Image (tube, rainbow, N blue to C red; front, side, top):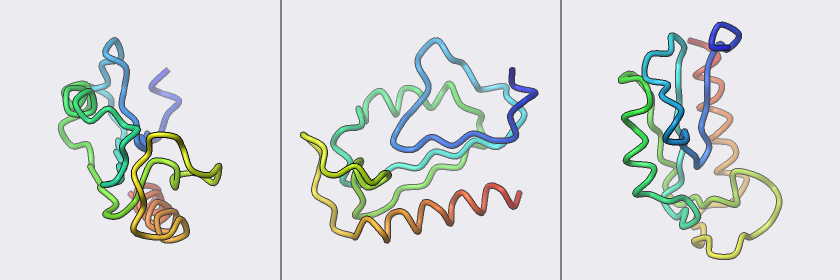
Length: 101
């Protein structure tokens, strides 16, 4: 039901290969973290063809996968070099920019 959506944000994630969103008519934002070792980066790169050409990509330098939330360290995740608060503040700013469009 794309008509019910005003925008879409991916946090350390990407669409499944059977979800072609390339023709949607709402803003799409992808937020990743440079030290995220949970995200399958190869699948992330491949999935970009499933997103609209005007998708906005953001990389939070020094962030990791776990710090998109507040549930603690995840096995296999990279070490963050910025605080959880800094990563979440940056994420909120990106959300706010999307809402303002």
